[in-house]
Amino acid sequence: MIAWHDQVGGSGAARVDRYFTDVSGGVSASPYEGLNLGAHVGDRPEDVERNRALLAEAVDVPAERLVFMNQVHGSSVEVITAPRAAEAPPSDGVVTRTADLALVVLVADCVPVLLADPVAGVVAAVHAGRPGMTAGVVPETIRRMREMGAGTIHAAVGPSVCGRCYEVPAEMRAGAGTVTPSAWTVSWVGTPAIDVAAGVVGQLADAAAEVEWVPGCTRESPSLYSYRRDGRTGRFAGVIVLRGEKS
Image (cartoon, rainbow, N blue to C red; front, side, top):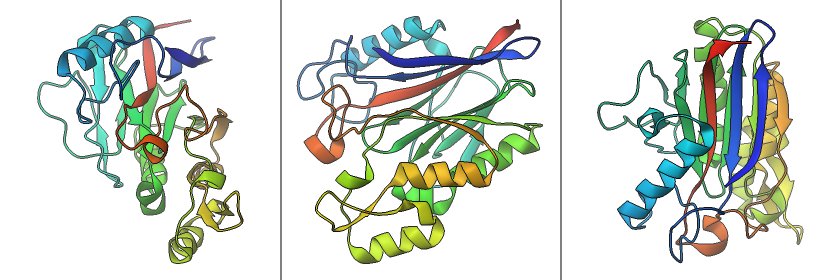
């Protein structure tokens, strides 16, 4: 269920927990088998609800404090101050200063990004696919965090489809490389490809963020959902929680 977890902060600053899930530990049946957290992919609603309850338990928040986005592959960023009381607006980044909300980004090849400044008490979750990366959703989220007082930002970049597995037309690669040169790459067979995660890491470096890049290619790993590999499939998550107590 929890494939990766770490903490940043403490010693007088807020404590922030960051997590990435995998397919294990859930109740969904094939083709979503495991811990599918996506309610929009055709899975049984009751199974998704149970999986989300299991996630809430694993990250130690009530289920109603899980905050999901209405992800649209854009660059809109939402600031949230309380659990959702209505349907989420379209956005691919969500920022909060509210303690004990679990911000969730759902992916199955796109790049999940978790951002935190424990000293300022500001955290964010970002969904960065190729369109969002080129549209600047990560820099926009950082800009919004800094408007809220963030200084040094700690970034965790989760597993995604690697550049070798993300073959694209040459024109698409050229466009992405113009925006973020580090995204320009080649596939396993030498054809044009895009490394979205490398592009995101380049954007984070440009913003002077401290980066933890968690390894793993979704297309190559059976423990992760991959739309590019399987088509109809589930979604795994990145989750970030600003804890209420100081340590």
